[in-house]
Amino acid sequence: MKKKTLALTMAMALVLSLAACGNSNADVAAESTAAATTEAATEATTEAATEASTEAAEVVADEKSEGVMTYEEYMAADLDSEVVIEAYVQAKQSWWEDKATLYTQDQDGAYFIYNAACSEEDYAKLVPGTKIKVTGYKTEWSGEVEIAEGATFEIEEGSYIAPVTDVTDLLGTDDLINYQNQFVAFKGMTVEASQDATGNDVAFLYNYDGSGEDGNDLYFNVSLNGQTYTFTVESYLCDNTTDVYNAVKNLKIGDTIDMEGFLYWYEGVNPHITSVTVK
Image 1: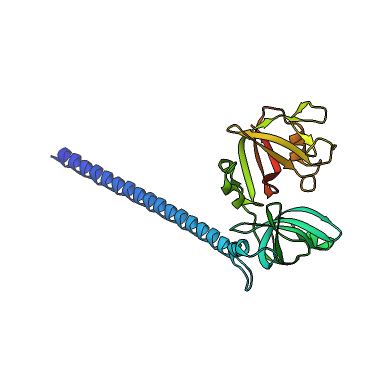
Image 2: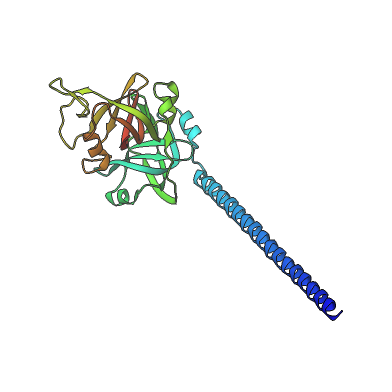
């Protein structure tokens, strides 16, 4: 009888022990689930906050001061009329005799600033992203809409670097002009032959007619879907010490390349390339 009682007591103790162990495991599982839920909620909150912060930054970048035109208003303005715009320097084309030529852009479009009054000291301050307020006259030269020589500018608070826009599919269409002077990409282009001054097939030319030398602008032909286009590495923008200048000098006829640069418009599309990658 005592043996039966002892065995029963031990069995009950074992059951209670297992029950307690089960409760402990359940508690751990519950704690793990709660922690995972909290972590997921935290990640979601962080992601939402980051997106909201990014959207807020974009709104700030796109705000215009009183009296400043939007890009739409600028494009609708009459030629030779005075315009006031705010934009962000994306690249400096050139400076001499206290005049600066700039590629600038905002959230909605790009503005080419030609020979604005600019001291050498101020030119040094115009790093990519710098916000400026420009007052000048809108003009058009060989199809290129720009702010004419003699414009003035003020440096303002704010910074914005425009993302690259892939416009490859727009080559050969009328829509491409809507992206003039913007920072754009062209992908999957094939290098075609150009003819130098002696009639030889080459991958690039110094100057448009091959009459130049190292250090001058580079011109090269590329094709897509049976159509050929001419692209330029502008020495003022990217001289012969830059990666892109030397990349073009190393191109071979038949190479497939991706490119980035600024969509300058002179008697048609004239992309000024700042980056070339051979695929």
